[in-house]
Image (cartoon, rainbow, N blue to C red; front, side):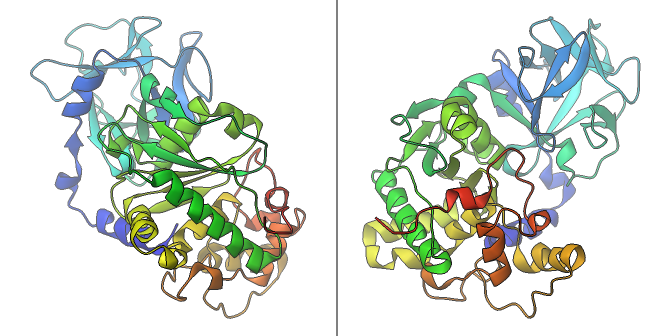
Length: 393
C-alpha cells in the first residue's frame, strides 16, 4: 500500500463516530428485491446456510440473501432466499441463526453502517451487538471498527458477474491489466492504451532491478460492474469481480489481476498475492500523463510497481520485512535506503530508479529463501514463477 493510502486511513480514523455512520438507504432500496452475497472481509468467504446452520464458505449454492427495508424504519431484515427464513438473534445472544420470525421481533432487525471502501458493519437491534468472525465462525458481540472480521461486503450477483470485454487469455502466470468501471462512472476513452503502456514500463522496471521480469497479457480486460463506485472500490470486490468474470485466468491460469477502478474514491492503492487495486488518485495521474505528456509516464508509476510487489508477495520493507527477517532468520537488513516497498513516493524522479533491497530480490527469485517474511500467498504460485522473462521483447 503506497503512502497516500496511509494518509487517507489516518484521516478516516479521526473522523467523528457520528459522521462515520451512514445508513445505506440508497443501497437498501436498490437491493430490496435483488439477490446478494454477504461477503466477509477477513474470512474472504460468503455467508450461507448448510443443514440449517450458518457457515462461511468460498463457494456453494446457499449464498443468496436479500436486504429488505422495513417501512418507516432505518433497520432492515436479512432474508435467506433459498429457505425463505430470516437472520435473527432471538434465542442466543452470541450465535445468530436463520428461521421463521414474527413481524415485531427486534432480534430480526439489523442496522447497516457504511464504513470504508464499501464495507459495512451489521448491528442487531435487540442485542445491540455486531456480526463478526473474529474467532473463526459467525457470532455477535462487541467489536472494534477496524476489525476486518466485522466488515461485510454486499456483493450483488449481477455486479459480481459483471459484463466483461476481453478475449481469452493467451497463457498462464502472467499479469493481466483489468479496468473496472462502476455503474455510476464512464470509461476513459484511451484507458486500455494507458494501462498497457504502464504495464510495459513496469515490466522494464522489474527487468532493470532484477535481471528478469514478468510477462503480461497484451489486451487489457474491461469489467463493467453493476455496483456504484463506493462498493466497487474495495480490493475484495475487485477480486470477486475477477473471480466471477475471469475465473479461468484468476483461478486456473493463476494470472495476477492488476485492477484499476475508474473513479474509485481517494488516492489509495492495495495489493495482495494475486491481485492489486488502483484507485482514482494514482489512476488519474497516470492517465493524464499518458494522454497529455507521455514522456513523463514513468514518473507516475512508483505506486503501481509497488502494488505489483505486494501481488508478488512482498511486504512493506521498513514496517514488516526488516523486523521479520531479524526475528525469523537473524538477518539484519541494515539501514534502509529509499526502496520500492517503502513509503517514499517522491524519492526518485522515475519508477525505473526505485530498487528492491538485496534480501527482497532473493525472496522474489528463490522460492525457498525466507518465505515466512512474504505475504501468505495461499495457493498462488511463488513470485519466481512469474519472473521468468530474461529478455525484454
